[in-house]
Every structure is written in C-alpha cells, then in structure tokens.
Amino acid sequence: MTPRSLTLSALAELPLVAPGDDLGALLIVALRRAQISPRDKDVLIVAQKIVSKAEGRFVDLKTVVPSARARALADEVDKDPRLVEIILSESTEVIRKRRDVLIVAHRLGFIMANAGVDQSNVDAEESERVLLLPRDPDGSAAALKARLDGEFGADLAVVINDSFGRPWRMGVTGVALGAAGLPALRNMVGAPDLFGRKLRVTEIAIADEIAAAASLLMGQGAEGQPAVHMRGLDWNGPATPASALLRPKELDLFR
Image: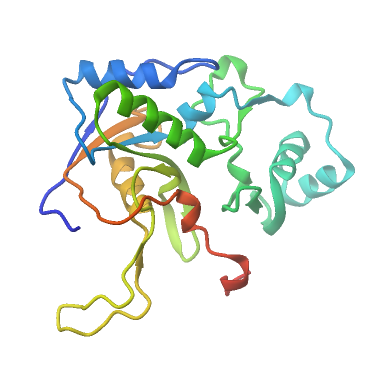
C-alpha cells in the first residue's frame, strides 16, 4: 500500500462557489483544464468550504435570536451570542470553554472549535453570514465520486477536508470530514513490522493523511486552491467512510 512517490496537483482557476452551483461540473471542468484524465484510484480532495457553499450551508447572523443559554455562554467566552447560538445548535456537548475558545462535540461526532461555524473565506460584503459544515460529508463525498466516476469512466476516491487544531499540538492540519471510494481507516493489527514483530494497536488514518497532504497546496488563507488531485496511492480492502475515524466517546480517555 505504501507508494514510492505521490503526485499532488492543485486545480487552478476554480471559480468562487455559490449556493446551488453544480460542484461536480465545476470540478470536471477544472480537471479537463488541467489536462488531467482521472484513473482508477486517483483521489480528489475537496475543501469543506466549497462543498458547504454549494450546498447553501449559510446562516445570516441577523436572523438569529440567541437563547438565554447562548447569551450566558457568550459572556463567558467573549463571543457574539448569535454565533454561540448557531454553535450550540450544531453541537451535542460543550467540551471545553474559556475566553475566545469554545470546543464542542459537533452533531456529526467531530470534536472541534466552534462546531466548524466559520466566517473565513466568506464574502466580506456579506459579513453577517457564517458557513456551517455539510449536513452529511460522507454522503457529499459519495455523490461527488459517483459524478466523477460516471464522467471519466474510472473508479476514483473523494476526500472532503477541513482544518482542525489538535490537543497537545500547535497549529492546524488537514482532516478528512468525508470520504468515499477508499478505506478511510486501515487496521494494521497483526501485520509484521520490519523485524517480524506483530503490530498490536496500529491503525492508520489514511483519509486524514491524504487531507493533510492536500492542505499543503490548498493553504489556509487567500491561496484559492480548494481542490487537489492526487495520483500514486494504492490500497486494498473495502472502502470505509470518514466517520470510521471518529473515536467513540467511551474510548476517549480525555473527555
């Protein structure tokens, strides 16, 4: 499964995505413009923001009436109570809080800051709008895979990535929110190491590693490269969604 080389190519000139846009069609045009003919086991990594934008996952803060709970929590963390109301509506549990920090369990199971509710790379002329995560990132990845497979006659994989902070580590890195067409998590338990010892606990977060690699090209600011094509990876075994990467709460030693 381990390749000797990988090629990652950002798709240039992808237009700004708006609600209702046919994201699959935009990606097809971008691949053709880049003169890339997708093959079996190529991977297309797509930024969460353009998926959410195409799906119309905007909320206008001007329409939000914060609850008493949201107002109290906003005072604690020094955030807009309307924003906190949206964060709570997207969450099942507040994990940690302090000034300027609100870590929650998203309704999809992700442990993340602000439930992924974000204003970065959202049109500044509509600064009261915030963007939410896709309703079903694995479903969104599967739909894009089906569209691309049908167009190019190949068996591709799709990963939807986002930027997460991590406990014990500074900075953010790419993480897979959704995946289709590949094993998002590979169980290596029982496989031999270099000296023949059997691995006892090792699992590889393949989809997260793909997302992180693509993030080096996507960037975090004004780079404008929200889609990346990867070639050279190989795998065996059935495809599993990115939800397979979520650690069950009962196995989380730090909650």
